[in-house]
Length: 316
Image (tube, rainbow, N blue to C red; front, side):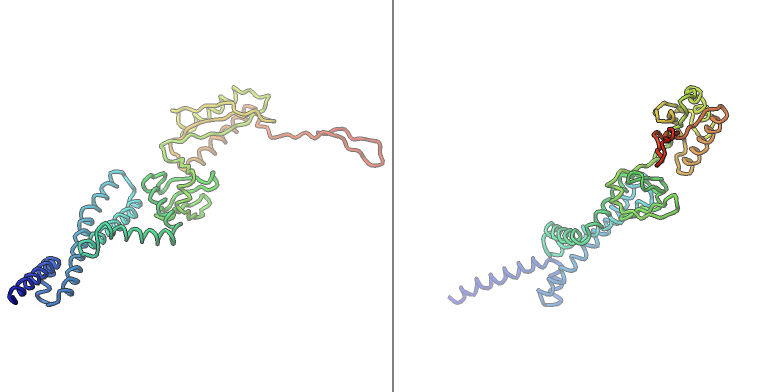
């Protein structure tokens, strides 16, 4: 009777010991045999599994994923300056994945649950404390991937109120040197939410200038001079060739708009070529007797002097 009751108890104890050994795993069983404490062995085994999984995932990322991302950037011909912050983001992503996977292997919770919990907590904290920073950060990523401009480009934004040459692009701000040698530190979100004008993105640039001539001057003669001086200038392209259109009939002049192309659309060449061309046309106008009139205002009316019946005649 007593022997029958002892048998099931021994079997139950053996079963519990077996289940506990399975839960400990090979590492936990080895530590348990040395330490003689199953709880302590389980804790240390979890730490070892966490560390092993973290190191394995991190090494895979550094040796395989990061070089693969770098080669992808090279194929897209991203600037070296632009690749550095994007590679940092990749490494941070690998760190996040390594920690999440290690949580699962360490027995600290389900892998997906761990990842979701970390992501939710991080997103909440960053979203509340760093809204503007995150906005500029995301805008910086878009600038690196979309490449609306690069370092050295001359850009304009905010309706042309701001203009300059890009000196540096980071994940939060872009630094632009104005043509008055002032340094502007512009939040990236200001450049992605506004229309950016990049005149130097292509290998050529069309320029326009309106020459005003008098109503009594010969339009065809003035047109021939404007085109001739454009063809004479060594830095103005012959193909596409220059053209002239009558675009304005103002109060005191007729506006002839000259359109021409230059092959070196940098800010310095833009200003120099335009200035030289306009000067040459003005000189030819003077030689040919073509007038560039200035606005004339006519005043009409009379002026009565107190105590006198004389009224002044209208004057111009």
